Amino acid sequence: MSKLTKLFREELKDREVAFVYLGYSGIVLRVKEYTLVFDAGDLLEEEDIMDMQRPVIAMYTHNHSDHFHTRVAMKLYDLKGAIIITNDEVFKDLETFLPSTNLRLLAPRKGVRLGNARIFAIEGKHIVPTNVYYVIMDNLRIFHGGSSGYINLSKLNADIAFLPVGYPSADASPESAAQIAIDLNVKYAVAIHGNEEQKELFKEILKNKKPEIDVLIPKEEELVKISL
Image (cartoon, rainbow, N blue to C red; front, side, top):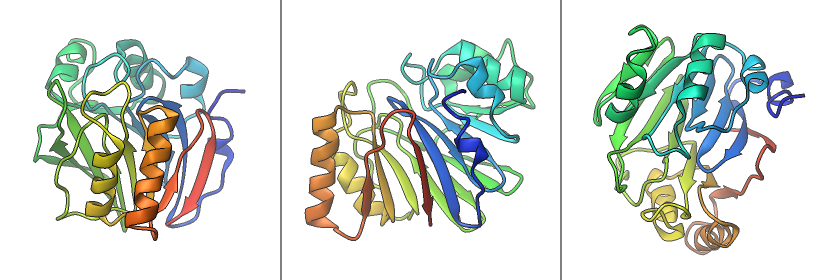
């Protein structure tokens, strides 16, 4: 059984999402019509990818090895025909191998529509150029922060946000992640990309500042299902 088998056996209703946390910033998320893969790094095996339901959209924030690995990106395309959305550096690594129909360069402040999904890249704060992603599907709004430090997103709102809280990122922190959650007025804030102490501090900050936000600290490979 792959780490994603349970995820793809779940029945999902409108405004329900289910996801598995892979580690670092890696997320595989299901909504009713799509599989979204964020920053899968080298954290997926072939059997995991085989379990995915099409259509698959994979997003990479930047080319650090804990976020992007060519092998996994190629398998996502080969096995599931995934559309891969990237920043410039990841695009350069993949453009020789993938057709333009399946590889999309998305510069900050630009967006792309794929069926019912609208995906927008926002410039993150990191030691290398990085995207963060804001995804709108019908009436769902999803944010993924890669390993970015604080950026002002107060003009947006999200139902669920995957927020980096620290280690090994030198830019992310519990404080910056908590402020992004508040700016986005999220319903669910999911702590990623940090150690356990940082994740607990993130939860405590939001408990004190914005207790109505539901903070999730998923374990690696744990199935999480929520209604938005």
